[in-house]
Image 1: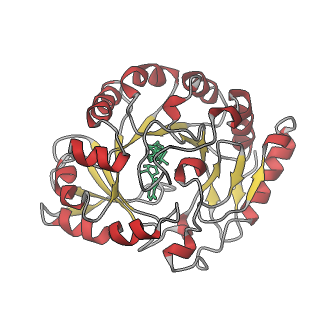
Image 2: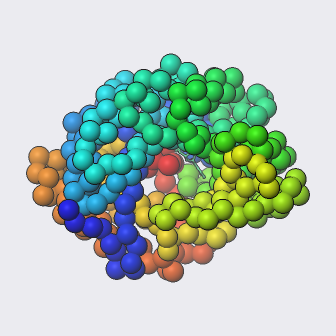
Amino acid sequence: MTSLVDKFGRQISYLRISVIDRCNLSCFYCMPTANGCSRSMGDALDLDGIVRIVRAAAVCGISKIRLTGGEPLLRPDLTELVENISAISGITDISLTTNGALLHQLARPLAAAGLNRINISLDSLQSEVFQRITRGGKLENTLTGLLAAYEAGLTPLKINVVLLKEINDGEVADFARLTLDRDIHVRFIEFMPITGDSHNWKKHYQPIDIAMKQCASIAPLLEEECPENGGPARYFRFKGGKGKLGFISPLSRHFCSQCNRLRVTAQGKLRACLFSEEEIDLRPLLGQEDEVIRAFSHALTAKPDPTCLDSDPLVRCRPNTFGMVSIGG
Ligand code: SAM
Ligand code: SF4
């Protein structure tokens, strides 16, 4: 087994795979238009292709896999995919990021197939606000899904909240209080201008420190030790609280020097960085594991210098026509 370490000393152990670029919601900060992404499931990698990529990744020392999208639960063979990935030697952790709307039926089968953990995107606890952000989504579907995931043991359950000024910033305390008596993690994330919609970004971007201050005014926050290779969130706990609060600040305090991940898009393009457009097409290489392994090593050379990313978010995020739904958030 090899190990992926880039020239800045960052050890890559984590691969995020977008398994589909369609979605059943149209969050305004992610999906450029309400009509959804024009690319269909048709050109997403098939199950065999994804499994081959994960096998090669495992040979390179990657142990953690996150399946994302688009909305991964729309993929008809998702349970089978998880089952296949969990059988790959060296893969010790499989997680999923989802909007949860279809989780009600799928939480148990996914857990049985080997899924370890789940992140659910939930930006508001108020039906109308949820509907506005997702352009028509139903809050109750996501809440039912969340409960199903909890009951299926897909824990610790993480709730991702994109912080949006004048939309959901008044709900920070409501979200934070969920962690007082439940073992769940609520993570606030800064809104990135990834779709290039600078108008909405300027209007609704809120630095994460403001949410942190709002939380600290509820009860004292105790900082939690960051697990090794634990990702970009800074974690805290309310004194006596069961769950955790996470703060993710890709813009105000970026965490590129700790970045431990590579990404694969739904079409099989290997990306070294969310903020860079360089991609390696893995699809033509899938017949030869050696070539895929070589592509992983090569991708490391494309990981940007953590100190050299542009400080202007509108430049750094390089507007992507398809938004996060295409790259895989
Ligand atoms: N559909 C799934 C979901 O919503 O969880 C998985 C894909 S989604 C692209 C993954 C994550 O990216 C979500 O937590 C979402 O909130 C986040 N995301 C999308 N666009 C974003 C943006 N412009 N800024 C910050 N986070 C974003
Ligand atoms: Fe869909 Fe997730 Fe993007 Fe919302 S954040 S549009 S649920 S892919």
